[in-house]
Structure formats: C-alpha cells, structure tokens
Image 1 (spheres, protein in one colour):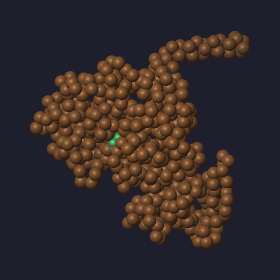
Image 2 (cartoon, helix red, strand yellow; image 1 turned 30 degrees about the vertical axis):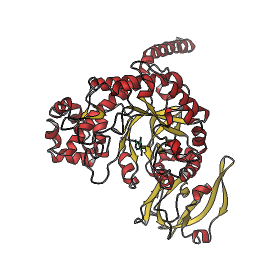
Image 3 (cartoon, protein in one colour; image 1 turned 60 degrees about the horizontal axis):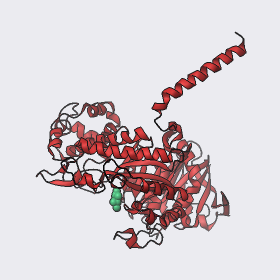
Image 4 (tube, protein in one colour; image 1 turned 135 degrees about the horizontal axis):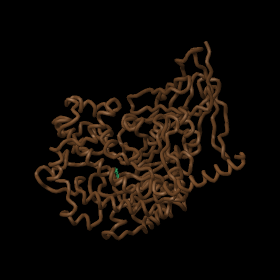
Length: 563
Ligand code: DGJ
C-alpha cells in the first residue's frame, strides 16, 4: 500500500477509534461533559500534591465565613468586595441542607446561585461546606422535616437511652436522605458552574463525631459494636501496616495485632476503640455521601476534624472524627474523599498541621486562627508543609461590619496581618507552586515564648532563625523560595535574624554575598535598597522585621561559601 493511502487509512481508523472512545468514555467521565482534566482536581506534581484549577496549580488563599453569613444574599452583598480587597482568592462558606431542601424532594438553589453570583462578580473562588447531617457533631442544619421525624431519622443515643440532637450515622435512612440532597447540590453545581469553575472544592459535613459519650448506644450501634470489624478495615490494616499512624498502629498491635474479631478483640477494651468504631461508621457514611455527590459532579472533596484538647477523652472530643489517630480508618472507610483536614485553633500549629501533611494526605486547612499568628502559620503551611490552602475562620471580621451583624459575642479578630500575608503570597504564588513541586521552598516557625530559634534546610544551606531580643510576638515565621543555587527570596512575619551554615561537601563557611529588599511594583518584584551594612550586621545575618509583610517587603538573599 502506498504510504499516503496507509496514512489515510490509519487516520480514518484512529478517528473511528476516537469516536468509539467518546461513546464509551462519556458515562465514565460523568454527566459533566467535562473531562476530569478540565475540572478542578488534585494532581501529584513532584513532591507535592496540588490543586489544579483551569489547568494551572492554584494556591488557596482562603477564609471561612461565620456559619450564618451565607444564608443571606443580602447580608453578603457588602461582604464580597471586602473579601476581595483583603486579597483572598477563595471563600469557604456553608451550603446547608435545610436551605436547599426545605420540603422533602423540593430543591431550592436560589441562595446557592446568589452566592455563586456574588463570588463571580468579585473574582473569588468558592469552597462549599456541606452542612448536611452534622455540623460540630450536632444536626442543627438539617431540614425541619428531618429534625421532627425521630422515628424515621434516629438519633445518637447515650448509654442511659436518652436521645441527643445528633442524627445517628448508623441509620441508612439518614444517610440516604443526606446523600440524595448532597447529590442534588452537586448536580446543580455541575449545571451552573461546570464551565466557570467558581467552586473548586467541597467539604462534606462539618466536624463530625460523638459527644458527650465515646460512642452511639442506639440498638443498631450496639449490634454493630459486638459484630466483627469489617474485613475492608482489617485488610487495609494489613496492607498498610508500615504506613499507619504510629498511635493507631500501637493501639492495634498492643491489643495483639489481630486481623479478625470484634472491635474490642481487635483494638482492645479502651475508649479509643469506641472512637475507632465511630470513625469507621462516620467514614463509611461520609464516603457514601461523597461518592453520591461525585457521581454528579466530580470536584475534590474533604472532611474536616475538630482536634483534641490536652487530656480529653473520646466523647469529650468529637469521637469518630477524622483525627490523626484515625486518619487510616477514614482512608479505608471513605476512599471517595480526597483528603482529611484539621481545623487548627491550637497554638501547636506545626504539630497538628504536620500530622495531616502525609504522603497519602495533602494538607488543606479549612479553619484556623487568623491575625498575626495566622500569618506566620500560613507561611509555614505553604513553605514547609506544601499546603494546598489556608483559611482563617470568621474572615469577614476584618473591616467595618458591626459585631451585631456578625451575630456572635466573641471578640472580633484583627485580620490585617492576614491581608498583609495574602497580599505578598498572591504575588509569590506562581513561584511557590512551581517550587513546591520541585522541592525549592522551605519555612521555619517559632511558636511560643519559650522557643528561641528554628531551622530550615534548603538547597545546600541551613538557615537558623532566632527571635530578635525584645520582640513581643510569640509566633513568627520565615519562608524561603529558592531562585538559584545560592539565591533565595525570603518572606517573614516577625522580628528575627537568620544566620546560615552548610553541612554539604565543599567549603564549610557560608557568607552573605548580598541582601536586596524587594517590593512588588507594576507587576514585578523590583529591588530597592541593598542592605549590606548595619541593616544586616555587616553581612553577618539577615535581619527580618515584624513590619515586612505590612510594607510588602521581601528580601533577595545571595549566599556564597568559603574556607
Ligand atoms: C469550628 C466549626 O467547624 C465552625 O463551623 C465554627 O463553629 C467554629 N468552630 C467556631 O469557632
């Protein structure tokens, strides 16, 4: 056959194959008509897992609204432009079951549509929080027709037989009604947002778990508790043994490392076993709801955890939530979830956030403290833990909203430091994202007055950050982005100084070749002063200032080595 004819035949064949592929792949790709690659999705890039939006990595510089703000389009009108002016690129906000399904089977998406419009007009992305069956363990956001019908929608019961205002995760009626409503929400988002991608992720439920006891004592829960641990979990334990969370693995192995038996036989007669039992139940429930939503519209989805106060027992904290010791149970029970997220309000940010930044669980922080501590934590999360996103809670507190409009009595936070850090981070984001993947970004965090110094390693160098004498800030951070073998952009959130050393082969002493302060102007970072005198102890240290972020100042540091 002539080469041209053969090529023509081959082209016709590949065209036919292509048509057949479209026909087959249509249903697989979902009813979206969009391929997975077009939708916001997570992608492993080098050592980091990143959120890809409109084909580009995206750093979520977010903030979560107070719980009730998004129930009113009117209330949100003046809030949107303020959030955009704060240099947020994403807002996390509830979508409540009671709002979208006030009557069973009748869906109302007016509020959701108004929120999408507000976000779009202000160039903001959204992460919806599905306030379905649970919000902070309670079921306060379920529709009245669910709340009132305790026969059809049973509650978690205490050991003395009392009901609580928490739907039981053991009820398939609850689960199916919740999943149906969530699927409707996702179907609607697909219809109205599949080409715009305003919504980039979805949180499924909010801070689930049981309080005030360590487990549900309803009849169906009791029956499950004395039944065998599902083999889906025991086989996961065996296949993932070496990668399990150490506390979880120790509990299992201390109880004998059994691969079959009841919950107490496999994990021991402790209250932690009650927690793991509930974790499996919540995970399989949330996994089911997530899968129902993804079948309609496949956005990245996650579940969030309320963390544990020191010395709290299961039931004092949310027993069964996606906590560090039960991440593996959740992974086994809810494979449809893309990640598990901590709501970090405690001062030990590095510890808690670090527990969730695992190779099998990229870090996303949907709720955390804002203000100056939040600014330091944001640098650490993005720089050291390759976080996908960061989001202080009650973000609309910044600005002129009177407290009675916010509707809570707690003190309002001054989020100006978040505005400052987001202003700088939004300019650095493309570089940070590129370097997260290539391993060229690092950060150090000093937490608490007792801690004087912290270290980071980047390229050939070790940077030691020491708190400057007399600084009043208890928490400070510095982030390094590597721009050449010996060159770094440094962003900091406190008064500190940094000295440099190396443990790599070659000349062992590190000198500072130069430090330039840089400001973002007219679309680029441009240098202003060269700081090689008193400002940097004649080149012996890089000095960082609490005012740097507010000024929009970063430093370009060049190092060299000598003997
Ligand atoms: C954690 C919850 O997830 C939020 O919805 C909100 O209630 C905050 N706590 C309040 O601090």
